[in-house]
Length: 91
Image 1 (cartoon, rainbow, N blue to C red):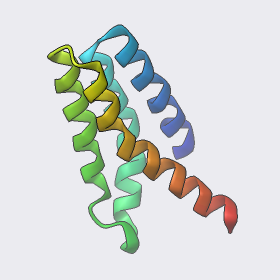
Image 2 (cartoon, helix red, strand yellow; image 1 turned 90 degrees about the vertical axis):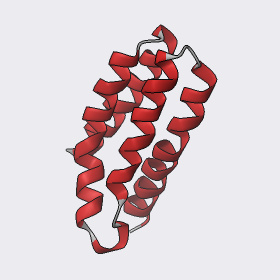
Image 3 (tube, rainbow, N blue to C red; image 1 turned 90 degrees about the horizontal axis):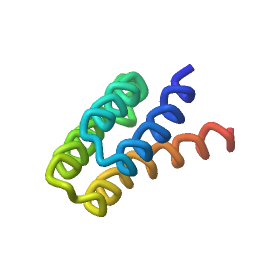
Image 4 (cartoon, one colour; image 1 turned 30 degrees about the vertical axis):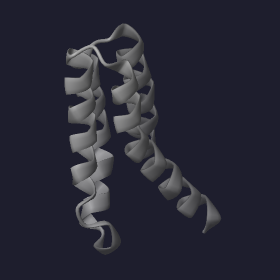
């Protein structure tokens, strides 16, 4: 179920950057939060909820009109999602 939120968050993030809408970026952070809190509950990923700060920082970057910075700020959450997906698939 969390994977649907991760995929939806990715699409909403891309939409937010293309539309330059910081509000949609906040929606993306809300969609990503269940996945981040779930990872935070596991012993190996303590502090995973801090990845949401990157979404909030991307929202601030969009508010200031800087799309490139917003893309860069979203890469850690994308890499984390891809890494976890590869771990799940390889088991």
